[in-house]
Length: 319
Ligand SMILES: CC(C)(COP(=O)(O)OP(=O)(O)OC[C@H]1O[C@@H](n2cnc3c(N)ncnc32)[C@H](O)[C@@H]1OP(=O)(O)O)[C@@H](O)C(=O)NCCC(=O)NCCS
Image (cartoon, rainbow, N blue to C red; front, side, top):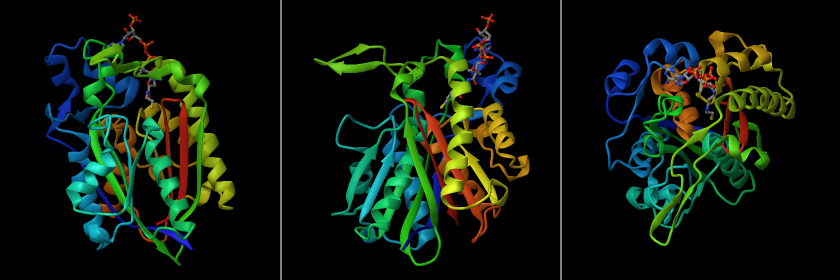
């Protein structure tokens, strides 16, 4: 029994916002700094009031349409997000309600930018256990809500969006291996250290980051976890047709590809146009490459994420 991808979908809110537009909005930055350090040229920012469930719903509807699966057929809905609409109910339950599904198990996964790889690995285990047959896995974020627009070292890096996949039980190969890891001792290098208490926000409700520490950690674990899933599936990294790393920074993406010996033209890149959309980045890039015809049935695709926690994960699949 395999868990096989039968559909992908994605959604980006509004128009692209260029680096020059950010500078024109009063952020002390410039296109040259952002492009040379990160590869980011533009990102999408949701309107005030637009929520992760709204973005995730549209991505989910597109994935269901491609899969030819109705919402009523789903028996599992998992949403990876660190920017949920509410403390509760979960964003997964909100999307379930909007889709009109009743009865599927629905819950959120909070593993920040590794969230989609975690959610995919969890869904795969549900399906391969035989307990569930049709899963909707979504990564949806409005990271613009948790950015300090006075902190130029972080606010230029992130964007909003959503991506989704439908995963079904199949006797044809699908997900070949998954891995998930965390190191909670690194919680201080990337976090949003705030909470709601007694009706007030306490602590700091904005994203804070030690960029250089994150950079080094990300390159190391992205290479390690890619090798781990390839080994588990008895596949050489040179046999991977497409690498889809978390889209945080072109220098991290290129360093990871180089460490793995995977050619630059086999690496899917969206960070230049999306920025870092956290849990949405991998399914957004996957959907783009499926819809433009680069990823073909039967090809091997390696997905990987890394983010706050610190968390990291990967999935090797035959599409
Ligand atoms: C964030 C990152 C691009 C910063 O690059 P860096 O080379 O480490 O830059 P520094 O933070 O040392 O800052 C260098 C200078 O640029 C300035 N700077 C920071 N942000 C700037 C911006 N948006 N525009 C212009 N200048 C900026 C700093 O103030 C500093 O100036 P100073 O030397 O006069 O003090 C880099 O560390 C990085 O990509 N880290 C990984 C981040 C990431 O991927 N996070 C998500 C993981 S899931």
